[in-house]
Amino acid sequence: MSEEQVIGVRDLNFSIGSKPILKGISLSVRKGAVYALVGNNGAGKTTLLKVLLGLETQYQGEIRLFGSQELLAQRRRIGAVMQMLCRNMSLRGKEHLRQMCLLCGADPATEITRVAAMTECTGYLHKRLRDCSDGMYKRILIAGALVGAPSLLILDEPFNAIDPQGMEHLRILLHTLHKGGVTILVTSHILPELVRLATDFGVICEGRMSSEGTMRSLKERGFFRYIYAVDALSDGIHRLEQEHPALCAIPYYEDTIAVISQSQPVLSEGFRFCEKAEADTEEILRYYMCGKEQTA
Ligand code: ADP
Ligand code: MG
Image 1 (spheres, rainbow, N blue to C red):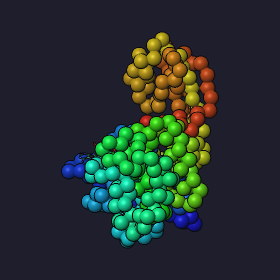
Image 2: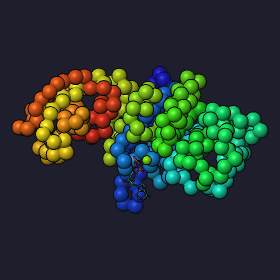
Image 3: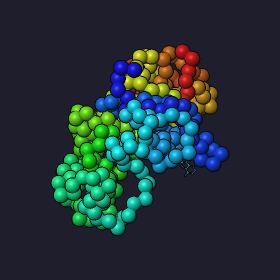
Image 4: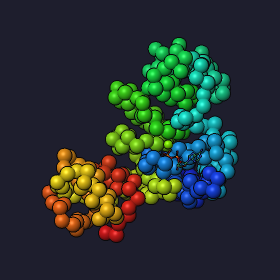
């Protein structure tokens, strides 16, 4: 491979008890990418990130970070924000950042100011974490992840709980970090944000990678949106799932349904064809997330 790989995972398997959660996952994140890991709830995204970060250790398969299998040493170069990590919520924001500085060997006197300015959380660093709104809390956690200027940022659902202005700000921040050469691995199901931000996508479906590549490579197969009118949306969606389970269908405007497909499906009576158009990026991701590969 000519491009430098920051994360390389090969045939990763991970179970909780007897339940397989990650089933033969392989993925590759190249240096400088904003890699979006998408998938429905419960697909295994958070679990995969936990394995990468060393929070889960009982896995089979090969993991390389920055080309090395010395994972402990390489993890020092990672900044991460994970959901549902237990933290001491009685700490003030500033104290949390100070702890992060001490862990990373950074000077709190300058580093706290730097990362707080980047994430615009300076105004509420005096608050205890438990008294912060979800969005404030998230910004402080992201500031913590930026301590020590990591080369790889791993962010699990960073857009959740952030207001629209905060979302824009976070998008700009991630874009700036990306331009500065930081590699970013981000999970989210807020597809419009990811589509604006990501250079590469991995789609995970029930513990398996269903697709991986740049948006261009995922688009190459030529997807269309076929719009059908129905008498009532909920009934139409239900019938479509029953009668055509292999199709990826999403509610469209009012009483219309979009079927994302490479070729026009033949639908039963009651679905009235309206129009065909090229599928947009978000719809193509939805197609891969459905896990319903069709024979063209
Ligand atoms: P995602 O982040 O894609 O929504 P997760 O990685 O959190 O998905 O979860 C993947 C699967 O693993 C789900 O079926 C979830 O119920 C299961 N799982 C995750 N953590 C645990 C746990 N501690 N005990 C049992 N099952 C778990
Ligand atoms: Mg998750």
